Structure formats: C-alpha cells, structure tokens
Length: 189
Image 1 (cartoon, rainbow, N blue to C red):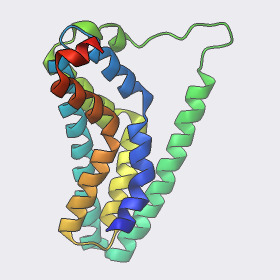
Image 2: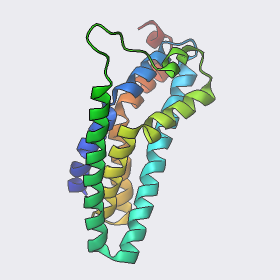
Image 3: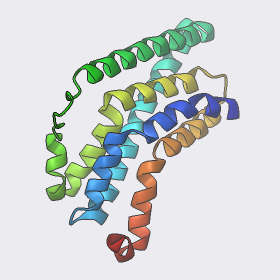
Image 4: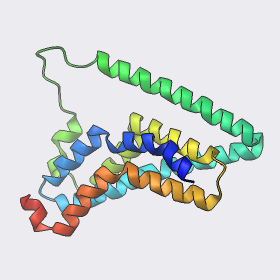
C-alpha cells in the first residue's frame, strides 16, 4: 500500500501545486464572502477529484475483469504514456501562446468576476478546476489508473485514493481550514 502511495505522490504534488486553482482560491479568500465561498470551492475541488478517481477506478477494474490483471496493467501503462504525451503537447501549446516580451498577459474572465461569485458558482468552479482542468484531470487519471492497477485490496485502494486526494488538495484545504477556524483573525491576516 505504501509503495502505491509513493507511486502516485508525484501526481498528487503536481495537482497540489497547480497555480490556477491556488490563485483562484486566494482571490476568493480576499472577496467579501470569503468564508462561505472558499468552503464551497473546497467541497467542489474535492468532489471533482473524487468523481474522476472513482470513474477511472471503476473503468480499470472493469477492464481487469474482462481482459485479466496483466492486460489491465499493460493498458494502464499505455494510458499513462499517452497522458504524458498529451501533457507535453499541452505544455508546448501553452508555451507557444505565451505573451511576447513586453506584452501583458490577459487575466481569465472568471478571475475578474471572483469577487461577486455566489456559493453555488464557487462550488462549480472548484469542481471544474480540479476535475476538468486538463492538467489536473490527466494527473488524476494517471494516479487513479496506477491505484486501480496495483495488486491491493479494495480497502487499501480506498485508503490510497483518499490519501492521494488529501495530498493533492493540501494547498486548497490548508488555507480554507485556516479561514474557517481563525475567522476574523484570518480576514485581517
């Protein structure tokens, strides 16, 4: 079980250090409805990660039943290679579209409206940034595939998945928990 956690640790750290969700959360924490919106953002974030992981776990386990254990593990390895290539392509595309020297980067539209976000939209934004954001989606799929292909019990699979999601969410859970616990002291800070 610990070996599987070690295998998915890079993906969890990659998700945790994703800058766009962290920036969105910081902007949300500076808004007028910070406590409620940040809590809803965190719930949406966790839900997005859980939904993707559960879908991948179910698909890989179904593949194990149909094709056998070895074929499922081979399929996961090929899938991870494909996901890696997709990430390289996305990185190259983003690098090519970066602002030229002296040009100012444009802020995404959703960031400009974050101060007036309602709790339901904060929930949806959290789910989108964790579950649909291409980088986070691909890292989550790769990790869930690794977990599903591992030779561990269903209980161990659940524990490893929870640990993965918690590590991937530490940069979201930490600030939100601080704001919820510290209350007005956090608002001043």
